[in-house]
Length: 366
Image (cartoon, rainbow, N blue to C red; front, side, top):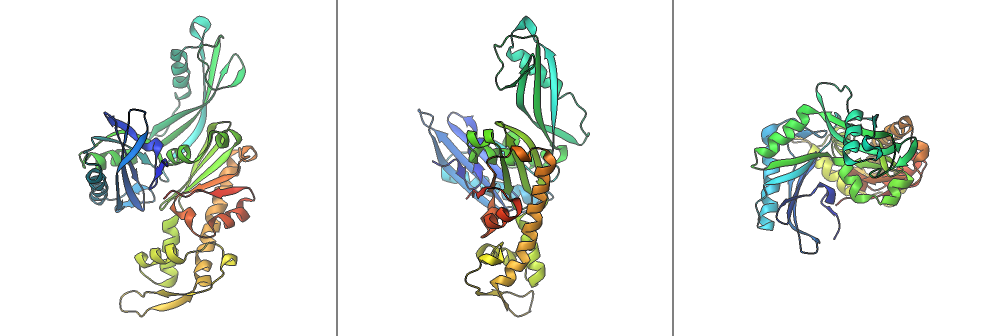
């Protein structure tokens, strides 16, 4: 069974009670709850799935508590009804323009001249003993590699002999208030939060093979509110970034240009949207509802592409800039993997090939 169920990855599902698991994906466009259970052989079976329109979020951040609570509650209740089970806790994700990340290092003397778990814990603590803004909190400390007496590229140093242990880590932080608001909304639905994890990290773990992580891959998660970027190399995360442009901005562009309601613009985007004019084979006409009493109008699909293509080009250019500035561009041997609803737009992969000038494929989460 696929690890991807309506945008919720296997890595976002947590063991709850007995053999039941629950995960909650709070996105700008939709909210999805998945409930699963395992059999005696540890095989996972999806038994509950709930989806609701996401109301109360903008660009990955909650801006209306009451509306978000109702959206979450609807999604959870739908999944519980299907599963015949009431969940108590979930793991959930976090995204948005407030996400920050950086690399750090730490070093300690090895006790008893043999690396133990205690030594690993201590060296990671030294790597995280850094100043971060008071309004941010650490979400993840992700070890990249350990170094024992100068020997680099060690993934698991336990049991190795030496006197000095070093670590290189990637630290991800997020706005403390954003995390608190997520927890508050979920708790108001009668459910506790086991852990909050970076949404793009969960997506990456569900769509990338270990070989892709080792050889070097950029994951581009194109959601509704933000586009999240993760750079993998040598089996570890080297860089993360966020671009505040995604599917909602494309919808708004269409609504403004065509003077049509946002809800209608979204429908037009999903049904007729194309990111590259050169791919249009049938330049059909599209009916565009007017606002208020204004009459309907028609436009060609090529005209719609002229609205969408510049925005996606801008997005891809910003992504390419983030990858270049990360310093790991030359280590990305496996190219770029795109995921998220916006990556499903026709022509998204082809336009990306033009902009990124590298091998790339589109991996849709549906």
